[in-house]
Image (cartoon, rainbow over all chains, first blue to last red; front, side, top):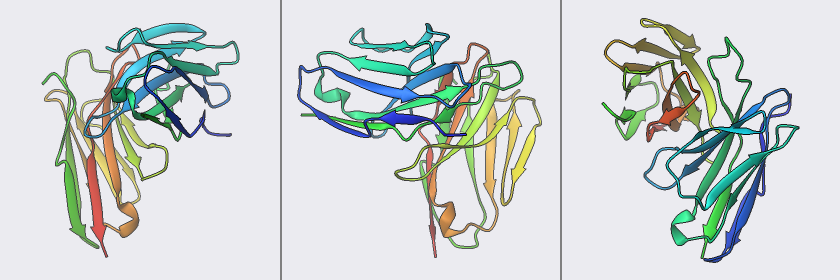
Length: 115
Length: 111
């Protein structure tokens, strides 16, 4: 099975712009979660999508949004970028079925730099 | 404990040494404890998931234990090798599939 893929891997934007990141989960996985990692911080949970619906949301401003398509692929959008949004953004897919212990499988991440 | 905490933050050991890290997590609303190994420029790789108090898991030279009553887990590496150098993350998940990650322990194994 192919792993979780994320595109693009690297991105440079300027303040005020918006950005869209993409995540393709492992085939058969219906849950996609997004995380932000900045230096010195653990992975901060952004949101989770399951069956095209946002199921959980972390403590991030409304500039951060996402969606999930019928094929389980997910996109994350950040509007009005700020310097502090520079981070590694990881997505993780999960089968989210009973007995799976909610295991999450991570993609390689998108490194976003805001200038 | 409100957050998932890991200690130490970083660790340097000699090749062949055994080592261990600690993960502390809130006991309330706990569902599972996850350990990941994250090498630079790669994806975090799942090592173990444990749910029951007293669980012990082993994969080669790496093992982990879980104490849900007191809210901690240990990860052990026996006979560290340079290829074990990585950041080791733990995360606590609840029944709502929300994951709470620690900041990780960075391990460097010196040949």
